[in-house]
Amino acid sequence: MNPLRLISKLGIWTHLGVIFMIELFKSSFAVAWAVMNPALKLNPAILVVPLDLKSDIHIATLANLVSLTPGTTSLHVSQDRKMLYVHALDGTNPDAVISGIKTTFESILLKSEA
Image 1 (cartoon, one colour):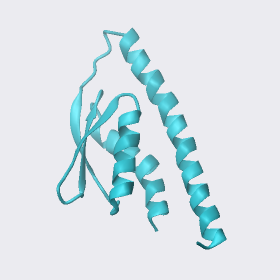
Image 2 (image 1 turned 120 degrees about the vertical axis):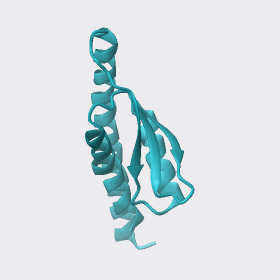
Image 3 (image 1 turned 90 degrees about the vertical axis):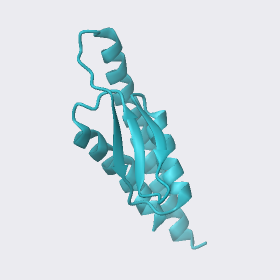
């Protein structure tokens, strides 16, 4: 493998790790806040996240990152591998949840797929 490509891939995966840690902290705080405030109105929902990823390993990585982030759980990947079904603790704004998954984790995984 080309050393520059290896360094680039390492940078992408490091970036993904940093973003995951940030999201882990933010979502842990949000879930703890929801637990401590029972009057807070949550709207649990199952959301469909359209996938741009093509490889099985990248789709599996995305699904695991979503499940490891408190407040969300990956439920299923469609047979054609174009949709990821996600349970969100608060689906009041489903577009924000879907956009968050796509702009954080998926966008970085797309770079590593190239």
